[in-house]
Image 1 (tube, helix red, strand yellow):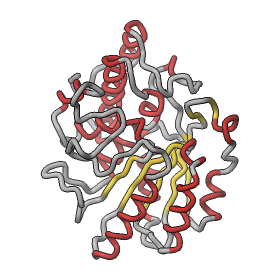
Image 2: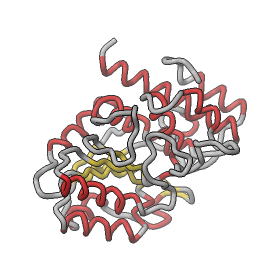
Image 3: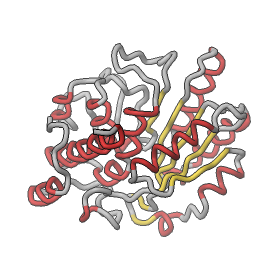
Image 4: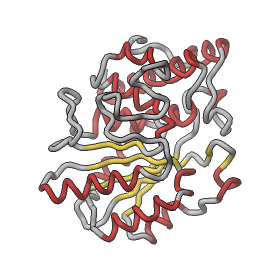
Length: 282
């Protein structure tokens, strides 16, 4: 099996994990999780220099990732488990009492791979920019990555952080925007139109590029590698990644409706029929 085929098989299994996790507790956010699966798998299984064990909070000498739109925790937890941060069987505890896999990632449970609590939208870019600046000050030449929802860009703190990152020439930082055009209450153009995301970041001094096919593994790899090549040149880098909410499950695509609801028994069966088991279910 080629490396690309292995990544695609991993993404397929992560999608199975996502729908099974949210179904088991009738709670969670499958839409955005499914839409960002290729990104997470590409990052953790190909692009990032990282060490699952032993996990350290400061991550010195490693690339760091911060999830700002923390409600898509199912894809994050599945990816971390599949990458070896903790036992895959722990995915069974998602959103249950006393679990380390809270609905939105938290830190006090000590789950490996989680360095910040997230879910209060708009905060992740500030944290990621600070972590990247810290690496520069310490002489650590590794990179910092973050992911943000496009609806999250309606938060003002994002733009304060964007100004900060440009002003301080934080050029070891890549922020990716999941541009699926949807948020919990509807399409972003109807809730609060973002108009041209790339133009906004360019106006704030960032280097910007697009991934037009964010649910195609090869396109994600090519686009993120191009972003990595553009680091170290005096500007933070923004990747506008165009995805489809619910990607991989046909009846979850094309609408914001699956942002935050779980499939019932029949819907789970239909979803899993489209996602053949590749690495073994938890």
